[in-house]
Image (cartoon, rainbow, N blue to C red; front, side, top):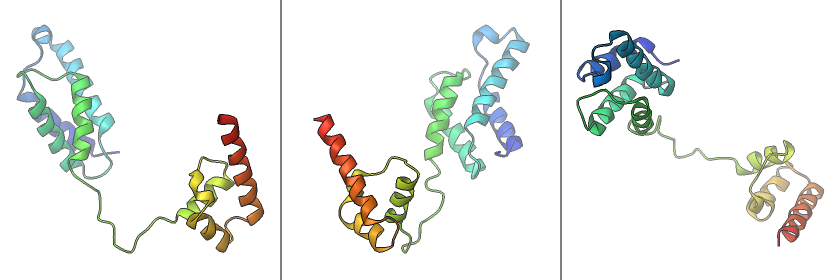
Length: 155
């Protein structure tokens, strides 16, 4: 789980800058329950890595979205949390020689009876699966027949 202490401390520091909603100002126990609900929303959406960057992005987004000096709602915290996930950018740079193995992925999906891209039954991916022995020509022919029969039923 994410660094709970860092998230709790930073979010509580942010929350102190704002006033509790008017209906909670004379009810400290209810205000604490609301603050706990807001923190729980933060913790539910917190990432496993780059927590410090994410909590800063969350607080910045909450500041940006605030229309009053009052605490946000749980829904507003969750919306800001989603946007904060986009702020840090990609986790790591992919090297130039990295690529997906479409043939292996498709063959695994076929074996596991999972959905796969129909266009992989023809062309380069199909040729690669056959060449590497990931699927037999009989299996490929049967899959093509099944897909063609389904298309005929859909028409």
